[in-house]
Length: 325
Ligand SMILES: NC(=O)c1ccc[n+]([C@@H]2O[C@H](COP(=O)([O-])OP(=O)(O)OC[C@H]3O[C@@H](n4cnc5c(N)ncnc54)[C@H](OP(=O)(O)O)[C@@H]3O)[C@@H](O)[C@H]2O)c1
Image 1 (tube, helix red, strand yellow):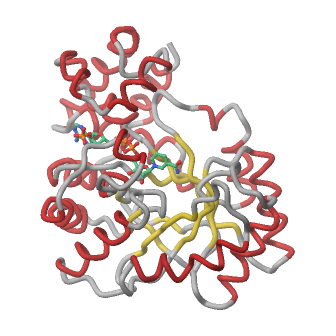
Image 2 (cartoon, protein in one colour):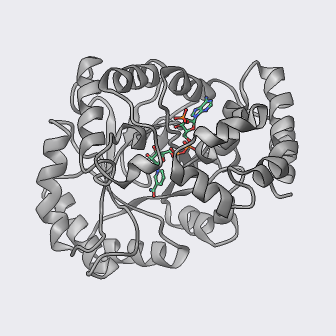
Image 3 (cartoon, helix red, strand yellow):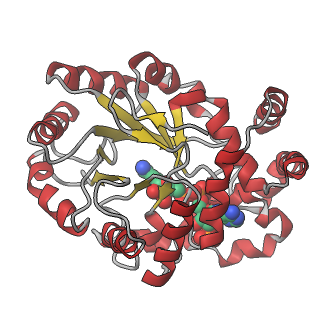
């Protein structure tokens, strides 16, 4: 599969990137959502992604207060990757801070990334900052103009906020590159809430996070429901809140979909999770790229291999239908 342009920038991304929340360690609240992994495992996950053709990585300040950024940079170096050879996306954490902190903390981002440039800097969420969205975007635009970052993105923005962000940046002569939102077979909200239409109209890339619904769309919990009990507490908590999440009810509801994914995957010799990811990067065309997380090298290799086949329109249609039931 060919690369996709990040918004209207000159950055080319593989349709599958690697989500690096799994590299957060134990320093903050993310430890309730992931199982921490050591540096050696991080390096083997990154190596598997690179070997499979992944050319970009998504991390964030919030992922262990710089721990994920550091672990990613160390892994890339061990794998022989020089700064600039891959794209690194990171995010500013707005909670309880002002736009001035975007400028103040860029040095921390660059230090944690150990020489790897910030290819995309994102506002992690539209809420939580003492400053307005326009003030935060103007600070981002200033970083781009001073050459400290290569492009500007947002995350978890609604259609209205996306249009606002685009307008504010355009007035600064800067293009909005991306909006990172949850999209997967069980979360197709972007199709109804205007985010997909706005992104297409404005030439903004949508970065699909939690593309496997935290592992549910791998089918492994359907095979062995007892595995749910061993999941990190926040994954279980959100699973119970979501009627199609990680709970007995959620597994029952999603079983017909997963059974069909398994049957479709068999014809290609691929796994259920590979069908889930291929649906995502095929269904929405070039507008969407995905960042599956991986805590094991074989998961990263599986994800990367998704770029080697393409589901048919009929298969996409069948999955579309089942994913809404
Ligand atoms: N912007 C935001 O607000 C936001 C929010 C959430 C996530 N994100 C980003 O999106 C990335 C991915 O999201 P996510 O981690 O929430 O969800 P995800 O990608 O849907 O699920 C990742 C988990 O699925 C399991 N998995 C992966 N490949 C598998 C395979 N082949 N077979 C079986 N299980 C497999 C692994 O679980 P185990 O580790 O338990 O094996 C892995 O940790 C994150 O790393 C982060 O970069 C962004």
